Image (cartoon, rainbow, N blue to C red; front, top):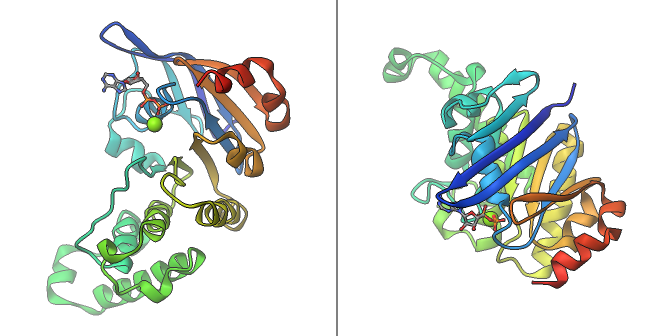
Amino acid sequence: MALLEVKNLGISFGGLRAVDDFNLKIEQGQLYGLIGPNGAGKTTVFNLLTGVYKPTDGKIYLDGEDITGKSNIEINKSGIARTFQNIRLFSGLTVLDNVKVGLHNQKEYTYSAFTGILRLPAYRRAEREMDERALEILKVFELEKEAEHMASNLPYGKQRKLEIARALATNPKLLLLDEPAAGMNPNETQELMDTISFVRDEFHMTILLIEHDMKLVAGICERLTVLNFGQVLANGDTSEVLKNPEVITAYLGE
Ligand SMILES: Nc1ncnc2c1ncn2[C@@H]1O[C@H](COP(=O)(O)OP(=O)(O)O)[C@@H](O)[C@H]1O
Ligand SMILES: [Mg+2]
């Protein structure tokens, strides 16, 4: 059984068919790329998968569970975490606390409000464990030295990494990354792609990566789906998809 299976997904905005008859199958542990020109419908697919928009057609299954039409919060609990094309962080919190916000969703780190107010040992233990876990995650992204910095004071590239770290802290089954390298210089971008590969290997994470730049995804994704005008233009092994003449034309047409 695929970890994510999407069947005939569609949504219209007024007269615009933003996503039409979209199908996708991702196996556990895959690093899968969703590419396509600007306005193709990539972010809309993420909004549909995460319950931001309700699909007008189709079905979404996560690990066998039908999550079609569920709310954003329910889907998050079911195991999908995402980052945004425009960074969304708690800018008034430290780097460490941003990651701890992610950890708070998990049972193993919860304590009752009563325990928290009285600062009982269970509270202190949970807090200590969360600090340790959050630091472990920050290390993966080479952000542990900035743990006590305010998120808003990080340079742009590091804010992008922190957003991924926070999403990862919710321990998702599936991680959705929407153009994580947007606005980065080539060196930062290459480093980020290496980190994403590392996250997949180290956490056996299943990742769906939206990227505008074909060359970037080709370097790390084993499978690709290409969207164009809301429809799947091609999908399959990366090397085959990139040879597809229709895909080449869609990109040249930009
Ligand atoms: N909430 C919305 N209302 C109306 N149109 C939308 C909405 N969200 C996206 N669209 C339109 O859907 C199309 C796909 O947008 P989007 O998914 O953001 O593309 P991509 O992420 O591939 O660049 C665009 O034409 C966009 O203007
Ligand atoms: Mg987009």
